[in-house]
Image (cartoon, rainbow, N blue to C red; front, top):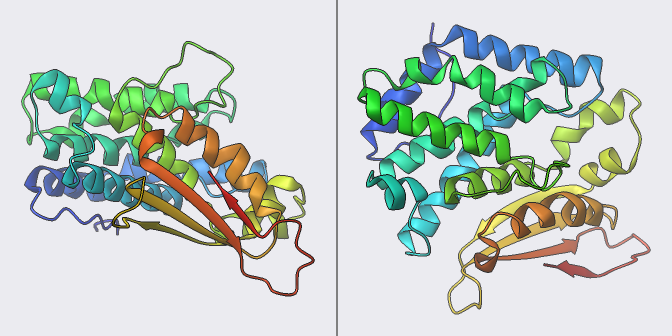
Length: 268
């Protein structure tokens, strides 16, 4: 039976074929399950499994398509390897759905474990859609996106984001911040600034306003001021180190009128 994992492939037949393989890959699906056992059941963390990676993949794909359609960027796989935009979509989707599978090992350095595990899966997912050479190129790009997605949280300064696709995956990962993701650790007793701030995020929207200084606006609605931590400590550094910061404007507003507000509005 196929696993439910919907990605809007549009007219990208290569992405459609790859996602068909993803939906049939029992090993990958089990890794997502194991990631959540480790993250939620054993560590009291937020979701790092199938729901999280679906959200990240859809956000990453939306960001990439908007930036390509507006001619803001040329994807790195197009620029460096003369492949096409459809292949860049495959890279960001695979990077998104595999970026956290290293959680099955441990939280520390999970991005590196994710890349190692992904290496055992990617070739199968790309066959027979791509040639051996193309599979190797896409694999290298996906692994770079996976290893870099934690930037700048990594303590290693040499782990730099060097592709547009990797920058997009990192931002998309940080944008999965709505309150539902934090509810499990909060209810299990993990009450700290991370869980409280995450529970404050009610809605995240990506807009493409006309006649604005920056072409992409991320609008965040918060129930209280604690949500600023989530934005300033997690989202802001991801955007700053992505190589794509010049395209993003972030605004956050508090929706709870009863709160004794520390701030009215927060912007990046």
